[in-house]
Length: 318
Image: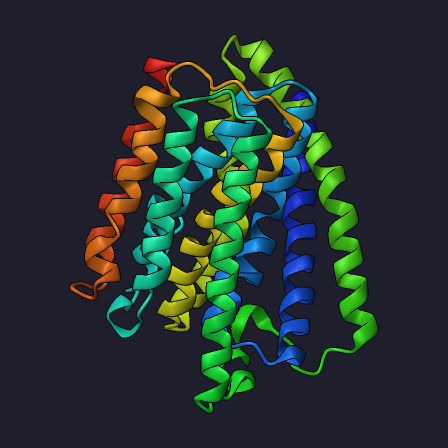
């Protein structure tokens, strides 16, 4: 029953998150926002919505291990699995895009988060710092969108195939998708948290391990689906943009908001191991962000292999 509850929560989160993303992308088409900016903000935020609801619910239920594990584990999975698995199907042509600026922001967000975790538990002032950094990222994305519009880019042409977007989606349909997504997300989060907590108790492991594995991988499914489709369509900017943007939102928005529901005590082992795995996996993207290599099948095997090794090591250290 606990497993059914957890899986049901994940399914509801994925469906609700997908509807939220589709509605938000359709709305962005009407607002004339460029594809890269959409992938760094709207798609990333929409696909991170499950993590946000889970973090808030975990904080309210005094389960900081799930809150931290969900975000840190999702960021690790976003790089190693969400990029690694699609690369097994087709080459991700990262030489064709430029995400250096947003990548630097992701590394900066990771370093800031680790620094704040060193003085955990996370509370209100930690949340203020994280949300202030998020405000800068959003402002920078806005400036990029403004510059793109002045450069004469055609946003509808860029967004035509993004997330199966419908440029002419009726306003009522957009509103319906957004409403169903926003209602379904908290319901799914509630089911998932209750099921995950029960599984952790039954298996005799900490909620942090469940957060880093089952919850993190489950909530990374929207990013994986988006990345697979973008890879098959040779939209490398969307692949990297989605992963980078989602990781930034996970750290700054999700933990920033969750901190206001704290204090969130840092689980044992995170500062000595998991946070550094998160930063290390992010640094693995340097040669691809700089355009030195495309993410070929051999890199996909390496990324997935590293993730499997991390999970095995995780189970032995927590």
